[in-house]
Length: 303
Length: 324
Image (cartoon, rainbow over all chains, first blue to last red; front, side, top):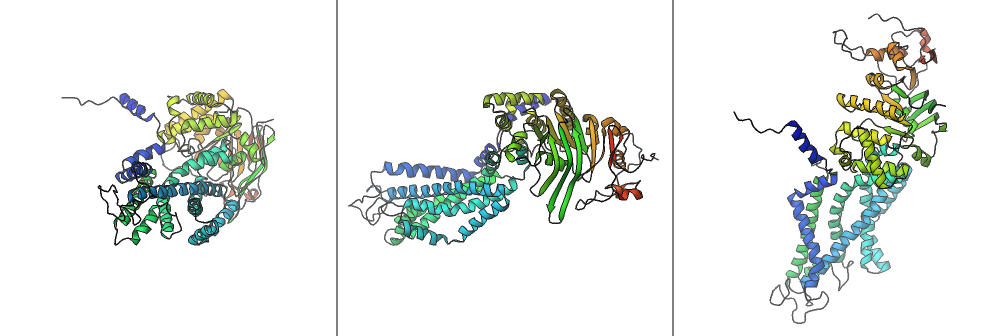
C-alpha cells in the first residue's frame, strides 16, 4: 500500500512559521484584498491612465488649448485634420482642451479633498478624543457652518474676491471638511475607549502621542474610503460651479466648463459635449468603484 | 517606607442613577519585590483600585484618599508628571492582550516607543533592548516577531509581549489586571510561571488582580480579599488558604472546584449577589449572604488583626467548625 506523502508536523509548522514570520500589517492585507477585486483594480487603472493622460496629453499634441485652428471651426473628430476629438466653435482643439480641463478637474478634486482631509481629521480627532465640553463647542460650530447655504457662500466669495481658481479650492475644501470632521469624530469616540489606548496611557504616552500614533492610524481606513468617495463629489461640485459660470474662467477650462459649452452646441457639434462628458463620467465611475473596493478591502467583516 | 502605600482610597462614579461607590476606604501596603494578590468577585472594586492607582479612572470617576508611591502622592498628580511615572516606574498589563495592542502598529514599534519615550534611547539601542526583553519572556525569533502585527500572534504571545512592554523600563511596580483570564489554561500556567520568575529576577513588586484563587496560590506572597470595595481579609498566602478567618474567604475557597471533591456534582456557590454599590451598606457588607450573620453584623466591623500578619473584617470570634 502506498503511503501518501504527508509532511511531518514539524515540517508543517516550520513552513507555517516561515510564512507568517514576515509580518504583514492590516493595510498590506487590505491592499492584497483590494487587488483581488476586479472592479476596484479596473477603477485604479482607469484613474492612473487618466492621470497620465491629462498630464502628458497636452504636451503630445501640437495644438494649444487657447489658440484656435483658423482653418477648422466646429469640425467633427478626424485624423486628417489632426483634431482627434474635433474642434469647438472657436476652432480650438477639443482633445487638448479635454485634457487641460481634466487637469483642472482632477486637481480641484484632489487638492480640495486634501484640504478637507487635513482640517477634518485634525478637528474631528481632537473633538472626539477630548470629548465633553470641547467636543460640544467644536461640533456646534460645525453644525453652524453646515447650516450656511453652500451656493450662497460660494457666490459671496466670488463676488467679494473675484473669480479665482484658488478660491474654488478654498470654498469647496471649506465645506467638505465638515463631513470629514463628523466621521472622524464618531470613529475617535469609539477608538478612545479601546484597550490599546488605555494601555498606551498606562505606559505613559502623552495625549498628543496617543492621537498621532494610536488614533489617527486606526482612522486611516475609514478616511481613505471617504477620500475616494469625496474626490468625485468635489469634481462634480466644481463641474456644477463651472456649468453655472462661477468656476474656472476662459480660456482655462475644466470638464464642467467644457460640458457647459458642449451643451450649447449639442445640435451642431455633439462631439464637443460627448468627449468631456464621457471623460467626466468615466472618472467618476472609476473613483466610485475604487471607493467601494477599498471599503470592502479595509473592512472585510462589513459586506 | 513601603513601595506603595494606599490609605483610605475611595473611588466613586457619578452615574445617572446616583453615586456608585466602587472602592470604600481601602488601605494596604506593598513592599518592594512583593507580590500581592487582590481577589474578589466581579464588581468588588479590584480593577477600579488599580485604575485609581494609575490615574486612569473613567471620566465620571473620582478617587480620594491617598496613594503614595515611594512617598510621592499619586492622586491629584499633574498629567505631565503622571506620564513620567506611568510605564516607567509603574506599569500595567491588561486582561485582553490582543485588544491591548494597537492593531495597526508592529510589535517592534509599540515596544520601541515606550523606550524612546521614557529612556530617551536611540532607535537602534531601543530595538536591541526590546529584542532582549522579548527573549526574556521566551519569545523565539524575537527579531522577526518585532516586525509582526498583533493579529498575527496568538493570545498567549500577545500577553508575553504586554509583559515585556510592562517590564521594558524596569518598573518598581507592575499591576497585572487579570493577566491570564482571556487565555486558555495551558498558556495561563506558562504566563504565571513567567511572571513569577521575572518578579524574582528583577525584584519588581506585582499587584496581581484576579478572581482565580489557583493563580494566587501559585504566585502571591500575600493576598487581600475584597468585597463591595472593602478589604475583607488580608494574610500571607499559605495562612489564608489554610486558615481563612472570614466567611467570605471561606465561601470563595469552597466554591473552587476540586478533583477530590465529593461526587454530588454541585459546587458550593456563595448564595446571593454582591450588593448594589449605589449605597454603601451600613453594616457588614457581606452580612446578607453570610451563613453566620447575627445581630452584631448590623454595624460595620473594623479591619482588625487576628495574628500579626492576618487581618480581617468580621465580628465573629472564630469561624464555626465546618460541618461538611
